[in-house]
Picture 1 (tube, chains in turn yellow, brown):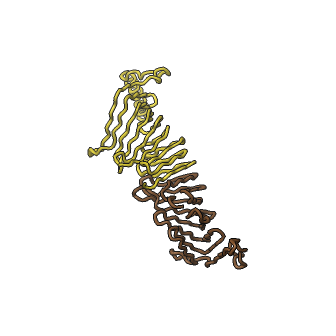
Picture 2 (cartoon, rainbow over the protein chains, first blue to last red; picture 1 turned 120 degrees about the horizontal axis):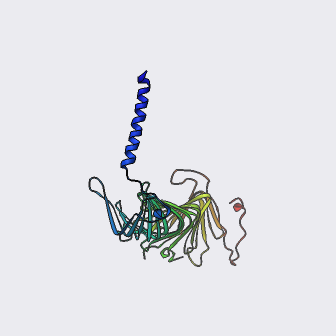
Picture 3 (spheres, each protein chain N blue to C red; picture 1 turned 90 degrees about the vertical axis):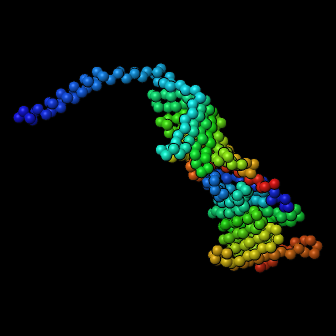
Length: 184
Length: 163
């Protein structure tokens, strides 16, 4: 008979003890007020972050003149970010500012320039004013005006673009106007 | 017109897809391509570029006939070639049309399943069979001669059924 009640009572007792113990030892979590959520928890000047694989292979380098981190919504704000990403060929991404959520969802704003194969004599240069970029899917999208130029030979303007930064598959959504100049 | 081939090629379309690294891209939706007097229209145009990023070939197609029109000399009438698929080879100047193909130069008309026209030599070939083996409409032709006095004769009866 005692067994039938003993076990549950023991379990309850232990959990109450556990609760009391954790409450006693865990520092009080900072109370997040509206003001503190608006303030960055971290401010950095002149940052550089190099990402490499486990085997040491270089993946990307991020530099920025300034960065602010907001833990409330896990958001990193970057000023003048420059991203150099490995690839065949590599990509080079710059903008006036960028907001990075959960380290994956980028919103680049202001003079956004993607350069594919920057060391090529006539690299492909894509310019827009705002670009959303997801590092997991490698998809970059914009609904704004976009210009794509390759040396002096090819120039395309359009409104809206979807671009896979890994495969360079692209889709220009509307109002497309291209000019191809023959070799003079 | 001589010198046109050195002019830029302009393309206007609703949409454009492809791979920026590959040399093939597709323009869709009311596609209009111009280079001097050369004029190409189609619902879809696939553009092939060579390694110098120059356009080497354009393939226009669509629900309505795609067509190419050009004036090969200032004193010549406009030549227009249309078909379900029209291919313009920018390097050789050869234009081909396949599927209800129709070539018109001034008042002269030729229709067939397949027509091949060479801008450089002014030669053209029309055939009920295309190089890819597909077959279709036999060749029909309507040539309207100039009268001595420069007046153009009425179209002969045999041309009545030419589309």
